[in-house]
Length: 201
Image (tube, rainbow, N blue to C red; front, side, top):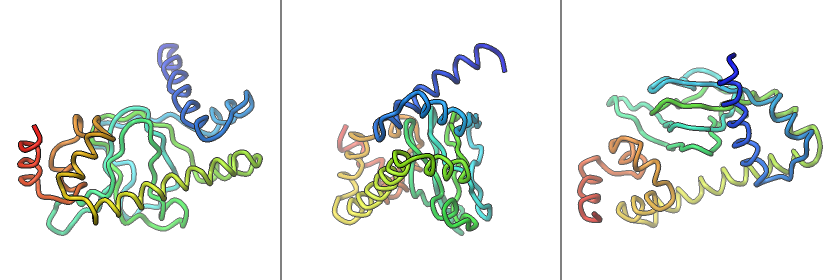
């Protein structure tokens, strides 16, 4: 690994450490532990990270790039379950925690730089001390709250309101993800989303 890439990855670790420190106060030993358990990975545009039928034993922190977590329908269309942006964690939770074959896929929409951590290494992290166990619980709370909020939004907000909220909370997704995928994510047809965009512009 050349010096330039090594320096770049060190900067990426700083982003990961900053993210984790929002949930748990870190010391020097914690930083060393993070660097030993999280590993840098680089994926190309349209490259799959998790495939249907495979057991996913990794969770990911997104440094840069955008990803789609989706189910492939018989029609050939993608049913978007989640769109992931930089500075977020991503995983197929059922497959990761239950060791079951994934029913969905996680694929890069753009080139992506990630840190991955295996389930074994995550368990090592959580068992190191009480601090990391608390971090794990807070992280899961975040996942569950986001999932509940998305369900409530799908029921209580109009398509236009859901799109406006996406603009406000994740402008990078609106700017970098194809309209067809965004439409599926908020639960409308692409042509309907096109009309919504014209109405609010």
